[in-house]
Image (cartoon, rainbow, N blue to C red):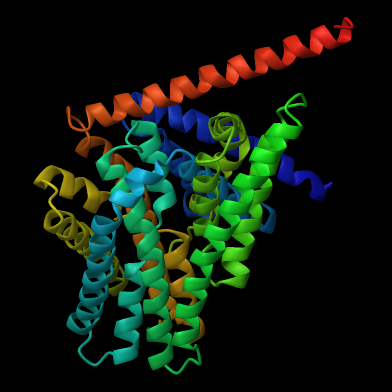
Length: 434
């Protein structure tokens, strides 16, 4: 019967994330915070630790390969829907600002992280200091995207800049990790990395052109058939591009999913496809993704050195992104409030930082006892980002952009309803012999 325990785990995750989200909403916090706290509470870090101390056995939800795979699919769907809601022209216009934000958002955490290690331990190895800095460069935009969607700020100037910067940040972070690994004794080929990144952009362009042509042809020759094929084909494109990005080009799978979403957004039936993915996201995959982040957290053994290191690395991780990315936005003409919003949007860390830290441990560049504080840093940044983003966006800025986004979305939904109504009317007429 143990093989069916995953059903109970999913039940607890879905119920707890919804209940905690309701409480966080009533506390004037983004609902995503509640979903994160649900995973943290029912995981080994809280409930597991309590039951272990009281009864000598851990009784809690535990991370599993199945939940990890579903969580990975969840973040892919989050980025896919973000791509479908992105205005490509506005994203292009944000490219210059996005590059400046991403560049300084890598330089400042890298330098401040390495400097922090030297200040806390002057005899630390140079490669170790640089590698800890490399861990701090990673930005996890998926949680920021969900918070921006909830706040209705995805289509604003700030929202597009955060998206552009996050995409560029991921590429710069990959290059940074490659360089750091290379100077630390790895055998990664830097020119090959640049070649793969360039190849990925060519791949996105060719795939987008081919998919758009295929959709136009399908719409022309099969206009009378069921519209359900469009979301299925769109999701298949998402999964294929996520796989190709990670396996073929060495770029994060979420970048491929986001690119697939942008391709969908400019193709026929793009609005119709986007409207069908909200259900699959909130019904299963998104709650599992956020809860799984909390389930992965395990608290390290408590000591004064560990506590000090944890506090310092949390402060440095927040300040370095906030100042570096905010400065990049300010240089590109944003006002102080918008620069603060951009900086906050880039604070969040996640799976990328965990992967980099794990690689550091495997290369003996990061001590295993330092992995705990790094995990705590990631979860703190993950939780506070949506909280402070909501506070930062209070006011009347970007109202025009939000109204335009809502108008476009409502128009797309009305168009989809008209198309479905016409399809059913044609079917009825054919059945009656007309």
